[in-house]
Length: 334
Image (cartoon, rainbow, N blue to C red; front, top):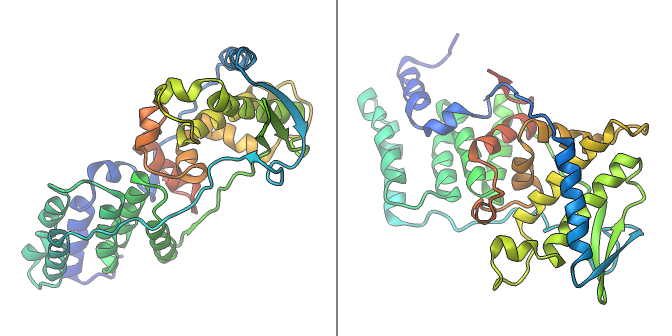
């Protein structure tokens, strides 16, 4: 039974029904969609890998495969560092005025006044660019009141959907979750292959810890895909011939997808013990959450650049990934 006093109960209902965008209410950190597994087209994966080999062979640079420590290799081309950063805060006078107005309305003894917070939220996002920090600022306001905690947590998730680098949103989420009996889970990926520029050729440095035929094939597919972006023309095809090469989230999405697909495709005929990390990636692929994983935990950033390359995860899958894979206990299936 709820322990909220009657006025606060009315507030909680108003918040639950109206203060969060419809998309967030449909998919949040406390309830997840039923899983529908996507089958793998093994033949298509093998065709893609064969095409990558042909394109690399036709490029101006040759490549070789070496064993070594990818992280310790001098000159190794590793993935972009998955960092969280401080984003510019909401600093417009109108936004601050609306937040102050919302606080005063919530403090009112009149339930009708409190319910006007719904309209304040609409105005807070109307006429301003919807952004990660704007969602975080509204979340911090909600978290000032216990009744708004769950909805504030979902608003923080929305801030991360918009830009997964947002350090302040991650820190607030880590502070808020324990009050709901939850905590954040680390999902970092140890990279077992890297590229190294070696004069006129590109070397693939493969970690000998990538044992088993399926794991070895998967990490080679990952590295070759990254080489295709770097020296095989894929970057120019995606972003335009005039753009100088740079590592992007889109490249990492492509490479990690190839990593998971190849492992799954080759695993059935590999007698070696399974690789837990790659098996988990294969599960994410089958549940259409792999791109969300890369967006959140491999190459965090705004979604826009990946969208330009046609490789961005959709916002709903990012919310699903956060609830099911980054929070413990995970969100419940509905």
